[in-house]
Length: 120
Image (tube, rainbow, N blue to C red; front, side, top):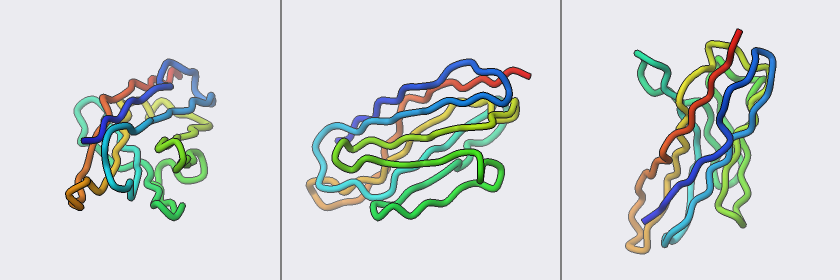
């Protein structure tokens, strides 16, 4: 099992910055992709950014150039640096990890979510 603990959300004014962190713990063979998703009120959960174990990244068009995803493989931790925040970035942000279990099966795990609110 993999447990994900998120931190770093909060309230910020438009144009400001926040940094989210997500630490994975538990028993597993390997962590593959790590990503961030968000869900605004009344909307479906959407992908924000993803990073592979090799460091390749991909971003939603709405955040490309403003957000940066990174990971520290030694700490099993991923980060989301969010700059130039806009009110439309307001949402609950969830971290996601695709891990290979000790039974060599790949499974997705989710954090508890952290609220990001951007005021205009």
